[in-house]
Length: 64
Image: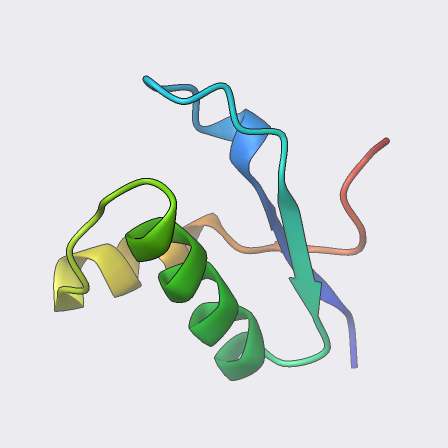
């Protein structure tokens, strides 16, 4: 099983966020990214937002 991650630096926006989140499962990562996205960036938890997150997941670990 490959680890999955999402790095906020790959999605520049109004916030200069340098957070990278990783997990062993897509579901665990999805939960963490939805929480971060809604709490920190103000995104709405919608099916479209969740699909965008799933499509943005990469295998491995975030580069330093």
